[in-house]
Image 1 (spheres, rainbow, N blue to C red):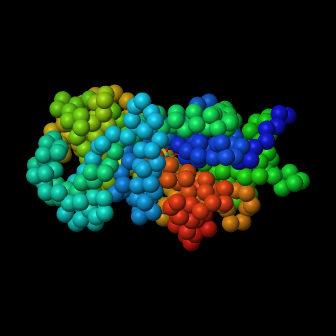
Image 2 (image 1 turned 45 degrees about the vertical axis):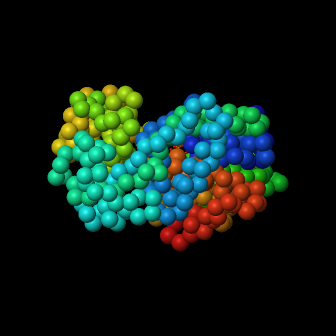
Image 3 (image 1 turned 120 degrees about the horizontal axis):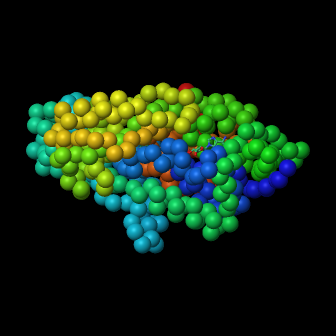
Length: 361
Ligand SMILES: Cc1cc2nc3c(=O)[nH]c(=O)nc-3n(C[C@H](O)[C@H](O)[C@H](O)COP(=O)(O)OP(=O)(O)OC[C@H]3O[C@@H](n4cnc5c(N)ncnc54)[C@H](O)[C@@H]3O)c2cc1C
């Protein structure tokens, strides 16, 4: 049986596993194992590609700001930017918008909202908030940058390797199987997205109640498309969002429906209902669906990512539960996780907030 040794074994080749592997490669021997034949096949290729500093609990917002700073540093050396300005606008009832319009989001008048998004039909919304620090993210370039940095640092990325068993060698290292191959390492990282609890069980670690939730998105054409530089617009009740896209308009019903860990597929009727809703709230005149997809956003009960060493199983490190914030927190979380793994002081010390041993998990 072929055997590979590593210092750190990362399970999962989505944005979480790739970001951490790229941060570690060069300093430590990293091997990343991805079950599918391509990287990012599951949730990481299905996002809305928006990074919103005002979105999520406080620790997520801090990690988002840190991630934006880190991506800006790395994109300085690239021929094409990864981030482009795209404001985020929340619309809804007065009390629903007020609850979220603080920090990076500030209240604006409905006249200002109509100036930025003239397609909003008058009278449907009482209030609006705007986050001008929000950006769109070219996630393909970002993931490819991580991939090339892993390879440049001597790390190995192996696709088509589904981890199916784990045990210990006599010297205490992990011995991990993927089909007929085995991999040994003192540290294993659980970056398995929707499968994170299942992978934890393979290593004898307690499940953390990480629940995958469906979220659908679609690109549709529009008779009256929004301005190309218009904001992403979201309902404050989390019932829809849309933003301009190169091919048409990207829309989502913002649903949060529990799902098993699986290769999720969209339901055409969900997209049809959403088109009807957005057409009733705007003058976009949405029509044909060009593409639609569903991904799984996986999160703990408190909605905060789960990152750090397991408190009961030596050498088992969690990098999971990123929910709807996986891209916007990716570089900040990777920087934090790498510091914990290398025994260094993290720039942003979020150990307690993200701890796999925190109450409620
Ligand atoms: C519609 C939608 C819109 C979104 N919009 C945004 C957005 O605008 N901004 C944002 O920040 N986030 C957004 N998200 C969330 C973001 O996409 C996720 O948080 C992020 O992609 C999660 O990355 P991940 O690496 O944890 O998971 P994944 O990308 O799912 O990667 C986990 C990988 O682990 C692999 N794996 C599982 N089990 C095993 C095993 N046993 N052995 C080997 N490999 C294994 C899987 O094959 C998978 O490739 C959105 C999500 C959806 C669905």
